[in-house]
Image 1 (cartoon, rainbow, N blue to C red):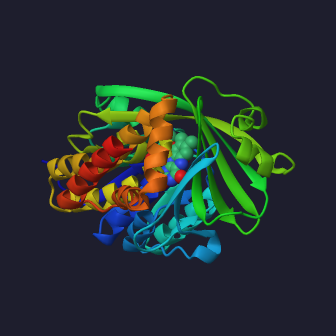
Image 2 (cartoon, helix red, strand yellow):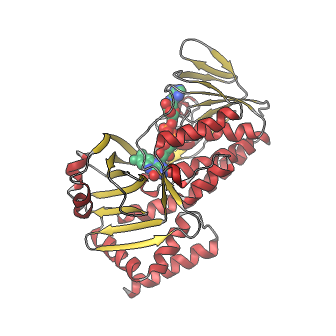
Image 3 (cartoon, rainbow, N blue to C red):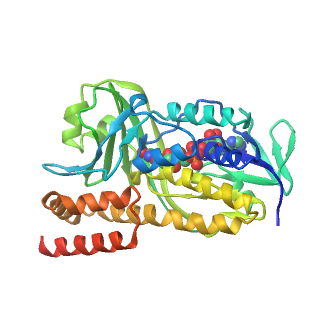
Length: 369
Ligand SMILES: Cc1cc2nc3c(=O)[nH]c(=O)nc-3n(C[C@H](O)[C@H](O)[C@H](O)COP(=O)(O)OP(=O)(O)OC[C@H]3O[C@@H](n4cnc5c(N)ncnc54)[C@H](O)[C@@H]3O)c2cc1C
């Protein structure tokens, strides 16, 4: 088995930074390389659920609502129907991605992590990594935090996955004062639009659809309530397209290589869970390296993915099924406690009793609706 204190992290996005911070907390020497340079932006819904805020706190990164926009809960909307649920405890925060990146980077630098920016990694070997330009850096542990299209995954032979389902997404920011303290998920026949307020005068809108990636203003027409709020408003920066994927790997580590964040599999964007997952993975990975046993990380990774995967499957079941979705919204609207229980599972309430009781209640209300 591997032993040693030198860690090399490939990718300096949120997952790579979280991995670097958690490893430094355990006394490892850490170098991070990224082909890009900070602060790194990326199409994202920019919603940090209360669980993400708590996980960041564990890493020593404090997020104040004043840096973004405080979020009270989640609201589902379709035509005239809507249902609202508050987070059971704490608040979420809508936060621009470059701000999150800078805050995490500041913490990593303060802890003594070393960085190689604008330096793509071109290959890995058993005892280190090759950098563009020809440098080779020795490492005992290699962490692949290089995102959804991970090359480290391929290099390490970890690419054999279960199913992979992708949807198309585009993100835009509108200059407008938020009209709600909730993350709004607007449903329509061909997809969803979700809105996260990110400051006192800006909202982030993500449109997700299975088969179309249209101009954001055209796609907005499918969501009449949202279109009426945003049609006259200016974009604060150009819209950007991307892909969101449900992707589970059979294994996330091999030898001295471990994958984290989107490189290690992902849940659909609609859950707003990707960041939180990677922060929790980072803590588990550092502990496993400390104990010199990546099997512990493999187990923790599987366990951490369970709840977000369940939520993603539940939400995606509603995608494209208009009757089921409208009936669900009616159940949620008429039984706010059921919706609130579901949201509490979504944000991290994982006790099996709560889980079972909520499923039973949901099923019962469905039969009665
Ligand atoms: C449309 C959309 C909306 C989302 N909304 C939310 C949300 O509201 N809340 C939430 O929590 N999550 C959300 N997510 C998920 C979240 O954005 C991701 O889970 C998160 O970005 C994963 O971070 P990461 O660090 O794993 O990957 P990335 O952010 O992709 O970072 C990977 C880094 O690796 C670098 N890299 C790649 N290859 C190399 C190489 N060979 N050498 C060096 N560097 C390399 C890249 O430059 C990049 O900086 C959303 C995702 C999508 C697609």
